[in-house]
Amino acid sequence: MKKTVCVLLALLALTAALVACTPESPPLPPLTGDPETAEATVSLPAETLPAESAPETAPAETAPVSSPKEYVFIVEPVYDYPDVIPVFEAIFFDGFPYFNVADQDADPAILSYAYYRDAEGRYGLLAADGSVAVPAEKEISWCGACRSFVDRDHVYYDKDLQAVTVRGHGGLSRIFYDTSRGSVAVTEPDGVRYLTAKDISYFTGALPCLDLSREIEGQTPTFLLLVEGKAVTSPTLTCARGYSDGLAAAEENGEWCYYDQNGGTVTHETNLYAGSYRNGVAAVKTADGKAGFILKDGTPLFPFDFEEARTFAPNGEAWVKVGGKWGKIRYSGR
Image (cartoon, rainbow, N blue to C red; front, side, top):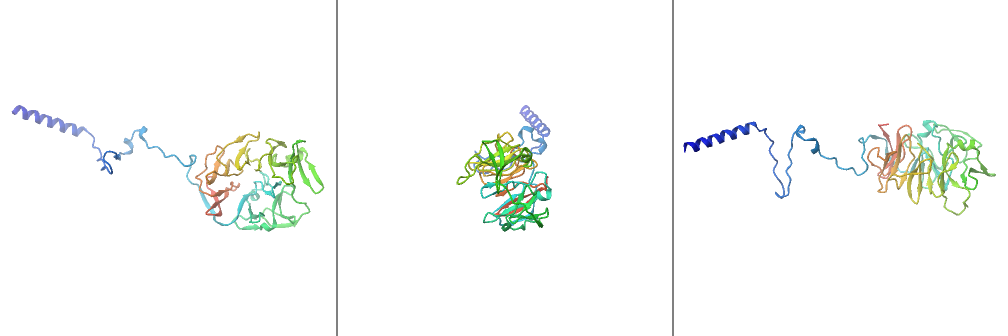
């Protein structure tokens, strides 16, 4: 009997020693739901978590973003314009392209303006605060020959959008490419004029235009892209923008993509809309109807929060559409 008591006392002493040497663990939370399937979660101090057990980040709905939302509205979305388009992107009047894109190295004040389109398809200009500076009734556009904004009455507007004088220039010319001659041409009141190499260089080296060798009347216009006066795509595009940052956005069969200066396609998920790249960023709208901004590798600049988006101007401001209304944001990261 004494031996049995001694053995029990020894075992109790050994157990107490082991407990004293074991670090204290936090209590487990109670199980909820089916006790056979519910999982208990233990809140351990961060330093005790092994590296391989760190929780994985849930996949984003779009491509990963490297930074949080970094924009603020500087013009609240209150304007009910049918459309807004930056002045450095091509505008097509009556289905024909005009030399209507402000030069890439134009005054930043000019490039910061935007056209708005009214319900009748006419274009006016917006001031910095989003209000109308030149009404659409004026049918204003950019004239490459005058290097300024000109309205239908040939009134010239300075970089502050003030009407300063009336010029004698005859307005804009349609731009074509004659595939049979391999030359760029413009239409003028007295006929077609083929452009010289010097003339072509004045067109910033790369632009969209119509195929002059096809019969124009009564057919749906199709476009092609030129680089240094030579066609790099076939005339099957239904819409196109000029080259910017080495890429041109173009539409074919209702889907937009980007073309490099060799005519090769750069594929991003931009099926509904693709804006011009500027400083490595372009506005896009994906097939699911979400709009935002992407870098050249297709990575979103920040989450796609908009119904429509237009590429950032040099001043870091861009027009976006939210709740059916247009406003303007500034990206704090640029």
